[in-house]
Amino acid sequence: MMPDQDASAPRFVVMPADIVLYFDRRFPPAPGDQTNQVAVIVDEWGALCIGKGVFGRRIERIPLQKLPSLPNVTFRRTNKPDHGQRQQIANYFLKHADRPSYFEAGLRALQCENYQLFETGELFPKRPTYRSDEEYEAAWSRFKSLLKPFDGIYTVDRSSRISRFIAWATHGTWSHVAVYIGNGEIHESVTSGLREGPLELYKGRQYWIAAYRHVGAIAKPRSIEEVRATVASSPFRRDGYNYRGAIRFGIRAFFNDHSPDLVPNSAMYAGNRILIGQV
Image (cartoon, rainbow, N blue to C red; front, side, top):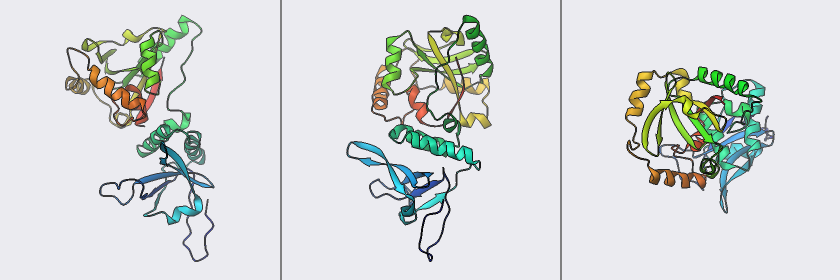
């Protein structure tokens, strides 16, 4: 794509999924940087970005012809040469052009080169279905075989109104998260405090369970010893549940502030988790 310009003006070529960095006076300046806004090229008509509306954030379109004149503008090519993959990225942002929190999650995923989000087009997966207990058992075995130490184990109890409410109120699928230690064991914070137990605590068709892996753990896997050292330094209470913190972060997530990823669903909005498997 190339915008129409005066013959004497510099020419530039942009492609779907390319990034546009620029300065927007409506937003505070980024420390040590001359840009504070990010837009994504989505089609031949221009780019989309998160702007300001009367009642909060909204997605705005920037016409292609206006891009070169944006203050401190810089163009960056997304590291995905395949046209189909680029189009997947553009389609994601077009699809979620009315959902600023999903749009921001896409920007974060682009930043850490997590392209799984764009392949599916969705922030949360669809729940698998099983026609028999045999199918479920086979799926559970496959799921368990995929796990590695430090994977996040995300769950929701579909038979519990409280669990379903937490998932709904925080704008996602999950209501609880545990850490997979290895050898079939998980570490989690529950109402009685911290505990370790078998993964099978969440085996059962009333549960929807999924494993996510941080993008940093793809290139640098963690050992069981490293995971145990990490969970041993956990700030969570060992003799009880931090209801105050859970409520505080839950309220922030309800109002679409997913910056602290201590709420299970907020971790998905960080854009740095890759879905490994689900049952």
